[in-house]
Image (cartoon, rainbow, N blue to C red; front, side, top):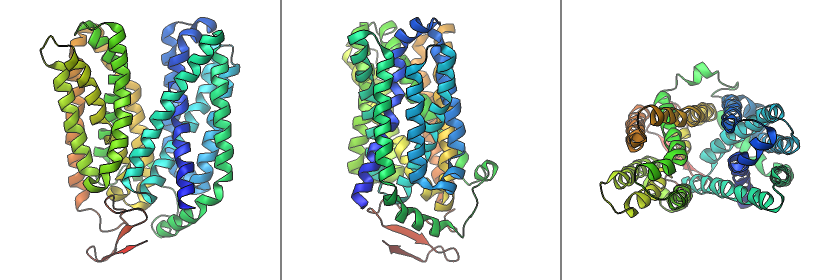
Length: 421
């Protein structure tokens, strides 16, 4: 039962990644057919991001009412319907309207699943599951390109991914009984803590949470800025041909996917906090290779891949540490708010660098990344200090323990604890 549910969750993470790269792959054809400027893709992504932020903030309330399993099933169904809506759209306005349920479905399931994994599974699964998100994000462009090459039909590409999402919805629906034992156990653990969903203002008062919000904001800003602007920097500043630069820019995301897979094997031994430190230090090494003043183009190209490897463990580790940092009873609300902050960074910081590149110079690209990394290392270390001595009143799920092992701290005596399966 345990292993079967884990397989279902892995499929759910693939479904999370499937839609994320469709718009970028199809937009050069879509904007011509819809008769809108190329820049209008930004409007669609902003609507999706805004809807995702809203549903992330509501994830605690939704999970409390219907449970993680049902919310996951409903969210994937909502995304499938939205993708089908994209496929039948013949106007830009219709695309914008379907972007709303698209974002709402993505945010709710992302926050709910991250919390569920943080509570019930070992740290390695958080890394591997986010690696599987990368698998989904890598598959969909190939699906879209298949239909674009055959008949220049982006509608069929969206339909194909929508059908896959409908199939995954059916699998999730059948698997609903598998979720109940753990959800019942979780509800029993947290019932005395808070029987009602938390208000956002209440969640924001959690000790150390502001540092986590800024850290995730900076991380997602860094990841998306690198993905969007790395090719332009390599071409314009390091004079690397566009084809080679584009290939290595794509390897940045492959580096993230591979890095999360590798992190899964060492996360149990290192723990979330050391994994974050190691990732950020590796990132700095990658940036150093990018800016190294040498005529050898291999250095900046390899540096970009190392940046991806270093970035890989930061997001999963911060998610997995949430019950440890903020308490089981607060983790769903905390993760929802953290993900909203992450999406804000994804939405606004890459365009900000675009403005800097246009008005000043694209040569500032590595400096921009370093500044974001400095913010990450500062806020994650402050988070560690803030939460180190604040664990007397909540249950801790230790990232260093094996699956199903938890460390329970008595509310009255912080030092009295026992292991339980």
